[in-house]
Length: 482
Image (cartoon, rainbow, N blue to C red; front, side, top):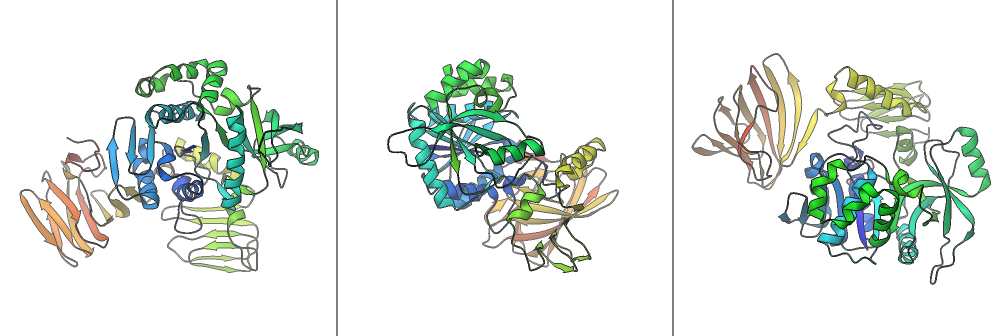
């Protein structure tokens, strides 16, 4: 079995915590692991690391690589234009943003051409940002569904609904279950897929007992999905007659369509396995509230929070003390640059806020105050007409590119750790409580050769301070060079 994890989405329904540059699959909601890492840890119960493929876009390359390496490997391997392989995992890059149908076709083609996946082997497709519990029981379902997939079915995983939810798609099963040799779990042919119903219809679905939430997870044989693409989505299906490298070249011309619309709602070869476990697609702040622990007042809080006369509310604090008084059924999310306050139950309207901010040209929808880079991160601490101040964290054994700036000078003050600095033709070490000045148009590099994170306060001064005033001459992360 190969496992294809979809990690290219840039959804903003969890704004302001999730943003275009740092979407929800990389957020750590309940501990030290991101949602992507939790998903990888779950599927590692079923397959070895080398059978996991993360499908994403190049904008998230270093987020995915960092999450994957910290979980399954410490060594990077060979690279090509279309994919990157660690010693125990695979990252496949979509050449351009497309929907789930062409993305899944790309991932399956990679498995066939680059991993030698047999036509009768199975591929499990799973979003990277769902919460599933208990993981061991889910793996039992997955192994059972594999038996049905080997019989030629495309198996979807349906979630037994607990409420008349209008934010999910639904799967209606046929009355009679299928009989498959060696399969003890129930499985049914799919009669119909329905997109998000209204309240009355959703309630009827629950009472009828034949509908399940559509989890967006599938398992199938490559030969089966290829044939279904050829039949129902021939513009995508034609890629299975080409090589993987040829597919990369024409990927941008493929239809922008979801796997549900392309195949699942048309094919008569779909089966569903009901899962009687906890599942949450983390699609809104209300779903976050559902998974967090509550205090005696029914409040879910993180960070430095004091909740007085507050009930059934969620308060997520970042760096500042956040105090609530006399609130009920409310949502408060505090980040470095945005505070969101909402009535619980209205969180689905966050997407409307994001649309309005986009029209206004606000950067808060794209970037956090803290921006992550392959070498670490930087946090914007303040800015004016001709200056800005950043806090840099350079991870051990990492470095910035060898670079220079045309329009700004920089002053570095080391707070902790030891910095190795290249300045023109000189190399020197700068220790804690020491500083160094970097003039305009001077070749320079900042490195951390030590074993602890390097923290530096950077003061930039000049007439142009945007990030595109960087000319790179040498970069170990293979970003654009001069």
